[in-house]
Amino acid sequence: MGKDFLEGRTAVVTGSTRGIGYAIAAALCGSGATVVISGRSEDGVSEAVRRLTTPLAGGAKGKVLGKVADVRASTDVEELFEWMDRETDGPDILVNNAGIGLFKSTAELTVEEWQRTLETNLSGAFYCSRAALARFKNRGGGYIINMGSLAGRDAFAGGAAYNASKFGLTGFTEAMLLDHRHDNVRVTHIMPGSVDTGFSGGSARADWKIAPEDIGEIVLMLLGMPERTLVSRVEVRPSKPRK
Ligand SMILES: NC(=O)c1ccc[n+]([C@@H]2O[C@H](COP(=O)([O-])OP(=O)(O)OC[C@H]3O[C@@H](n4cnc5c(N)ncnc54)[C@H](OP(=O)(O)O)[C@@H]3O)[C@@H](O)[C@H]2O)c1
Image (cartoon, rainbow, N blue to C red; front, side, top):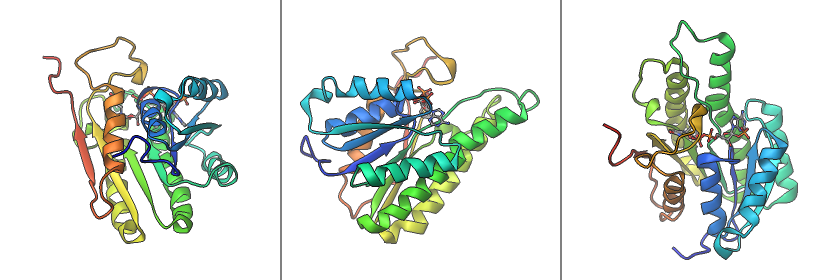
C-alpha cells in the first residue's frame, strides 16, 4: 500500500470532529483521500478541519473539507450529500461513525434519550448509507464502514438504549452487505471494545484502551484489501484490559 493509495478518492466520515472519527479522517487524508469532516456544530467542524490541515497529516496530498450535518435529520444528511455532489467528485467511501452513548437502566431511560440514541447510532447510519448508495451507482461502486461496537454483540446492564442501537446496527450492516455486494459495494462492520476518547463524557486518558489512531489504521487496512475480498466484521479489543 503506497503512502497516497487513496489519491483521487473521496471519503465522508460522520462524527469526525473528535475521537475515532477524527483519527479515521486523519488516516484517510494521510493516505491522499479528499476527506469530508462532519459533526453537529460549525465550530467543531471548522476546528477539526483546521487541525487536520496544519500541517496536512505529515505532508500527504489529501484535501480536507467540512460540512455541518446532524445525522439524526434525514434532511441534513441529504444536504450534506448534495453539497458533496457540488464540491467533490465523490463519495467513494462512507464511514458511519457518529454515535452517542447513554448508559442508564431501562426504567431510568427517558423516551427522549431512547430516541436520541437510536436516531443517532442507527437511523443516522441508514440515512447516510441510502444517500451514499444512490451515488455509488454513478461511481461504479464504493465502500461503507459502519462503526459498531462489541455492545452490538454483547448486552450489559445499563446498556438498553446503546445495546439496542448497536445490535440494530449489526443487523442493518449485515443486510446491507448482502443487498449490495454485487453492485461493487463493500460493507464492513468495525466493532471495537473500549477506545480512548471522550465518549459518553469520559475524560481520563487510559493507556490500556485502544487508541483512536489504531482504528484509523484498521480502516486503511480494509480499504487496501484487494477488491475481490471483503472483511465483513472486525472485532477489536484492548490487548490487556483493566483487571
Ligand atoms: N470510545 C469507545 O470506547 C467506543 C467503543 C466502541 C464503539 N464506539 C463508537 O465509535 C463511534 C465514535 O465514538 P467516539 O468514542 O469517537 O466518541 P466521541 O469522541 O464522543 O465522538 C463522537 C463524534 O460523533 C459526533 N456526533 C454525535 N452526535 C452526532 C449527530 N447527531 N450527528 C453528527 N455527528 C454527531 C460528535 O461530533 P459533534 O459533537 O461535533 O456533533 C463527535 O465528532 C461511536 O459510534 C461509538 O458508539 C466507541
